[in-house]
Amino acid sequence: MTQDVYINERVRASAASLQSALEAHMRTVFAPDARKTLRPFSAGEVADLLGISTSFLRKLHFDGKLPEVETSAGGRRQYTAADITAIRHALESTAKTPGTYLPGRRDGDRVQALAFLNFKGGSGKTTSTVHTAQRFALKGYRVLCVDVDPQASLTTLFGFQPEVDFYDSGSVYDALRYEDPVPLSAVIQKTFFTGIDLAPGGLMLQEFEHETPRALIDNIQPPFFSRMAAVLEEVEADYDVILFDCPPQLGYLTMSALCAATSVVITIVPNMLDVASMAQFLQMSADLLDVVADAGAEMKFDFMRFLINRYEPADGPQQQVVSFLRTLFPDDVMISTLLKSTAISDAGLTQQTLYEVERAQFNRQTYDRAVASLNAVNDELEALMQQAWRR
Image (tube, rainbow, N blue to C red; front, side, top):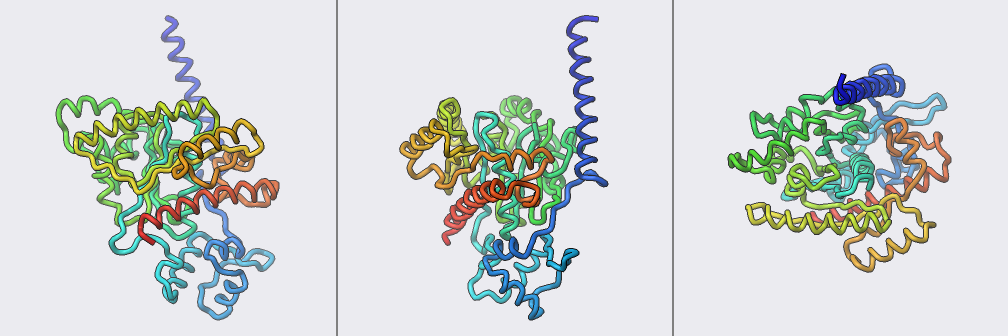
């Protein structure tokens, strides 16, 4: 047996063992159907999301203006995400100001497409994308997540097993590929989180990187930088916002997502190595965007923001880096920062987010601090999106 064969067999055996372990973990965490479900929300959480008081929420139930919901063993109302959506529609029908409870698109608004990206892995793109998607959905927006990363971490966080469910079909690649592409609607999946649909990622997306050079030589239309925008045209009327989770590389997939985006969020961990990497990323991006713009791509972003991620305010060097970035980009660095938190990493052990887990499962101070950070970041992004809609 040659050394090459031995290594191949070791790799194959390791992959099989890991896959088996992941399937067992999924069944343990999300039994009995190995799919995620979303917890109910308390009256206090619902009132906060709706922007009303808990007493007013109780009065609406007492007056029969809202549908009844399930109650806990202690008699407290428990709301599903679907219940929250139904309440939003009920309140919007009587609201004096349009968009008070359903803040999404109106006639004439274009869909908002936010691309989360960075050249460097580990910058928190997927964590930021999934928490933004869930916060937006809870606040009444219709959200489509597009997982453009062949590693498909975002797809995994929604309870799928990309290495099984979308190993050779069913991912975004099927809609982007140059030969016999399918409509994007054929691959979009409903998720356990009401208000969020998913266009899954998977390993086959890497084929797009391999096939594009030949497609450019053969002049296959539309070209790579227009393909994402083209496939989204079919479904964009069904959504208020589209979120791209891009791979940690500046390849054809990332460029395709960038050319379909209306706004860009660049995540960055505040240390000098990441800042240096971001400098290279920005230069390469500018050069490539010039190329695709010359080829006919229309590059107009409503906003571009740097999101400080995994921030530790007590860390002196990190404070210096953040101050440096704010001085250099005073209008482009987001005011809110996403704090580094054990609550976020602990939730990730069960492939969950902080919006999915129960507060009682964590140290309450740690949980509240992390959620406040997430809410501040996502509400700032929401405000930017509303400004793009000129309101």
